[in-house]
Image (cartoon, rainbow, N blue to C red; front, side, top):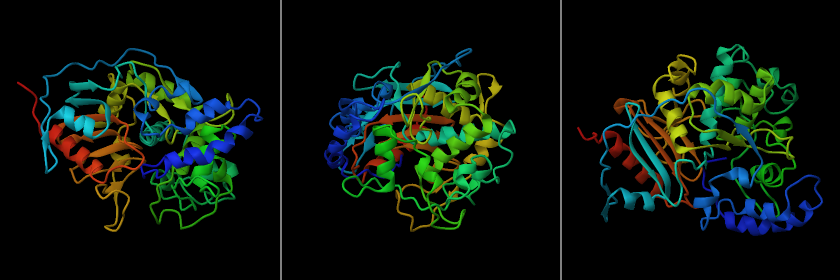
Length: 409
């Protein structure tokens, strides 16, 4: 799922309403009432709540925790900085409400210095990651590579998923797909209605109605540019990476995530992937559907800051985090978000801070890592589908202020 604004989501809900009637005849599919709930997922009147515990409404695949929990010690308290918009100055609470914050946690040197839950959420609440899941997918690719389940990033997608050989992904390498440079003819544009875009069609059929798998169109999609030549943000690329991981490892993605990442990380709570396709027969939505508690998202960020180490062990291969966060800068004309500077392997460079990087998800989800100050910030949000132009800039400005604010002695 893209971090690009989803325009006209409420209009889409109306446009999709006739689909509920036909869904009544779909075998083992969601009921019309469930479809209606799913169509309201991004509704700004309720999305502070619909972005939580999504397994109650969507298909899901559990990722159980195991082993010892990695401690998150309390550090010296951080006095959160004031924020100025130019026309007014406010404290943290004002900034948090202004920027649609559900929960926020700050780590400095691996210790919790600030933690806040809002809007009736708490430490046990599972929040949806949206596209922060893409960064998690890249971590899993690194593990599979270190285990020689994936032989080389320069192997082609079709080497692992033969069904992809004849379509637009046929010449794309795993590295190019990680970099969102597959070259396929896909646009991350969610136009619903009478003539829906491909992205909208996939969303409706795979996630809302559970009639197909998200990656199915990858088999027949065409090519638009030469692989490797052009950045094109595409959740379909990440879905293909999930398909490759399952074929390469011989495991369901949820099982591979649990045994290679979530357990070794020392997560304190189980997590889950949202899932596509018919109930019980779909695949983890690794491009947009991971759900976890705030503290475990923070553990992921700290593990990346520590070069892949967590809970006393090397969870991610040494050097992989550095490789996946080595960014390809965007041209000056790139207009996705003016603040964003580049992209690595399923991971963003969101600013000009030296070495900083971020997992980013739709509607304001961030795991922001600032190596210079050894700071990790997790912000889980409920941005409206049409985001104010000032929003991302003010969020990043405040992140920078947090990173540079010392804790109390």
